[in-house]
Amino acid sequence: MIFKDELIKILDDHGFEYFLKEHEPLFTVEDSKALRGQIEGAHSKNLFLKDAKENFFLISIEESTSIDLKKTMQHIQSKKLSFAKPEYLKNILGIEPGSVSPFALLNDVKKQVKFYLDRSFLESESVNFHPLINTATVNISPQNLVKLIEKYHNTVNYLDLENLKR
Image 1 (cartoon, rainbow, N blue to C red):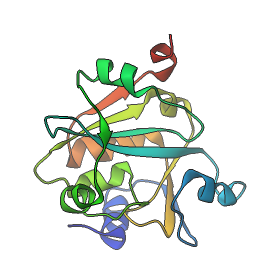
Image 2: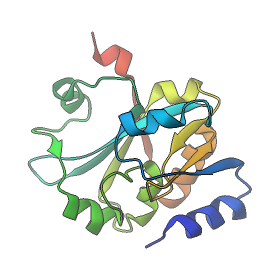
Image 3: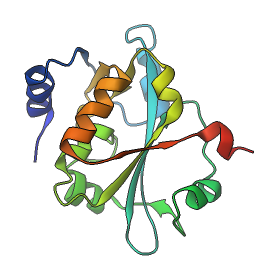
């Protein structure tokens, strides 16, 4: 398992530009709004889900975006999506509730989790995610986030949430 310090070393070793902001623990999107103005870029909401067959999904969307799970299920070709229990989060991604982010995929050594990124993030100059703990936020370009996930985890799949609303 990697933790925040190991993640930061990986970012440094690969020459990825990022900004790290330490802060009080943030458990919800509402909590994180206290950081607006201190951290630029798109802020995220991250959903760790499982289906009836115990397939796991991490979906990262822009914080103000609402998501229709029924339409999302069709798009990702899954049935009966629900939030995964905290023990799955700990056992598969090595993190606690409130710390969910794409960076946790680096701990998914068995590659059990299928990752979906909100396509709208690609239009942002930078995106913000917890670095495996909810007492800090990493601001990074979406392109570098994708490179990191593809190098250490697997494919990044994209959700076009605007089209799913139709």
